Length: 262
Image 1 (cartoon, one colour):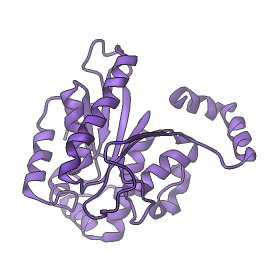
Image 2 (spheres, helix red, strand yellow; image 1 turned 60 degrees about the vertical axis):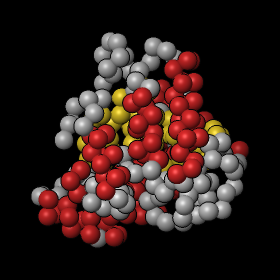
Image 3 (cartoon, helix red, strand yellow; image 1 turned 120 degrees about the horizontal axis):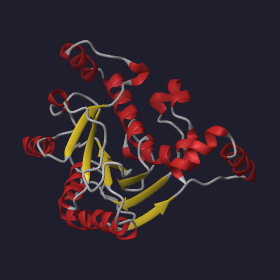
Image 4 (cartoon, one colour; image 1 turned 90 degrees about the vertical axis):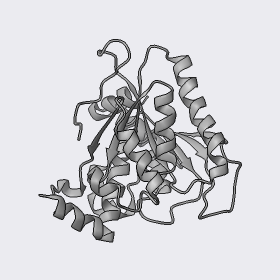
């Protein structure tokens, strides 16, 4: 496991990178992959054109499907990739995040790249499994597994300046899924399985979502064509909420948020 801090490999190490987090469906339709890849390339290319001297890091869980696609595109574009994994690699690769030996080989290949670092994200309640058996027990417990995946997604969102979401636009249906992370990034509402830990996932961490429409093999209904893009930002349903947020921005914590997000 490589625990080296995120650092630019392009130019001076004093440069602060822009971090794109990734949340994505695993079950992409194979016929959509070329247009999805092109959409991610466009986002990275547009950013580089506007900020040519700012290095880029892509932060994701490296699961099969959209995570792997985005990581591969980022590497091709010269960006660095940081794998924020929910479980240690030897356990993670045996779980449902990878549905075939071919996808596990792609995961292994990514971890072997020089420009890919990886670490395991903090667990809910800062739990620290003592050994591999303890990790295996967590992986086998469905409730714990959902909480760990949700905390992993929240970690990626909180530690990113913007989120790229390969998402079909359908609201949350399962715990710790892509839709819940989009909701979290836009509104700050933590995934339901983390409801008891909401104080650790405050809504002022909300930010930009670059939404790429991504149909799924498990949900064939298509709302928009694959690869279409939409930017989504924090919004408020009432003037009271907007004024409350304005007051927050003028506070000490708000200044920290504004420096990071605005």
